[in-house]
Amino acid sequence: MSKKYKRILVANRGDSAVRVIRACREMGIETVGVFSKGDRGALHTRLADYAICIGDVQSKDSYLNAYNVLAAATDYKVDAIHPGIGYFAENPDFCELCEECKIDYIGPGSSNIALMGDKVRAKRVAKESNIPVIGDDSVEINSYEECYQYAKQMGYPIILKAAKGGGGKGIRIVYKEEDLFRALELCIKEAEKVFDSGCILVERYIEDAKHIEVQVLADQFGNVIHLGDRECSIQRKNQKLIEESRCTTLDEETRRRMYEGAIDICKNIGYVGVGTIEYILEDNKTFYFMEMNTRLQVEHTISELITGIDLVKEQIQIAQGESLQIKQEDVLFQGYAIQCRILAEYFKDDFVPDFGIITRFDMPGGFGVRVDSAYEADNIVTPYYDSLLCKICCHDQTKGKAINKMLRCLEEMRVEGISTNKEVLMNILKDTRFLAGDYATTFLDTFN
Image (cartoon, rainbow, N blue to C red):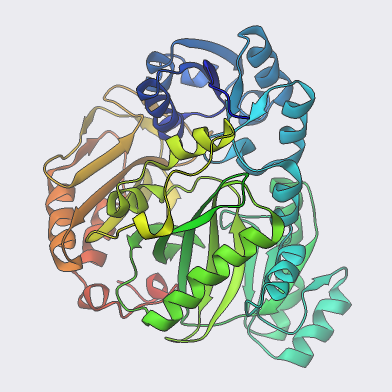
């Protein structure tokens, strides 16, 4: 039975919170914004109908403090909590706490989050759905000796991943035996710190691969559709920098199999909500399941631009118990869209984050341009949160036209007071390999 939310708490900050608050406002739903002492007066707190401070500047004391978030939700008598992107967006324990407090969690159920958040179990689900995975089995290592024996059998290079991780964290690539011990040690420490679990998955590392993902939508009545694919191969430190929709070099038969695989996984586990199936593309026809993100993605914006479908509103309607009003045949892909992440970083110093007072913050505009941000002039960029300042998206008929539009936008953009990655983004877009689609996830390793 469907219901209508009257008030939603947005358990996030920055452009993620702004994105959700704006969708709620258009749907006639009141919002409660939460903020740390470091975000007092931030844009998302001004856009929300109500705003409450939930702790100190450190995320663990505020945005990751489940007790404070739920106390605010209870105090303001909200119907649901939207986790946004990051923080509690893929946390099954927080989802269960919401259920115990009789507050809807806008996202999949805790069992789905836990299942697909475990890379070992997720690979097994993919295999059961007849989707190729790297290796015959999912290998979770428990000691250096196990890792050593696996690498000796499979050969180098190998990749170590936090089994409970995501977002490009807890990953190490090992090219030779003498580097294995140190890499494993660092990977375990990072996994324990970021994900509270030292479980590590080991796989053969595929060099010169592309990173392709498929956006899905599913309701509680078993209806599942896809909203096309995104190419996310331009990355730094295993984190996405430029995303495109759709991939311009993907073989159509391979694309069809990726779409079918994504839908099959959702149906096999009874998935409900917005999600993304991520693949590694070894060549134009050979791909492997990598992971599933059981949340809204940073790059969801470009899928919205080519389909005209508001994913946040769809999330909320699904959580209210409504069935999908969109059928697969209703989804039409119009043109091409590209997103650049504008980060407060020094590129020449190996992407070291910058922070300080923004003295100027002028964003571009125009036909086919979308900017998602929560920063303004005179805001302070602190070292406590993600370095993302904004996302600029451009939509046009072709990739070439969209690139030209993005270059114009980056030239117009003026951010002063802190360093940004603007220059490296422009250099990438001007590279002939980028226009041709001739690149892989290792592109920035050799980029000058």
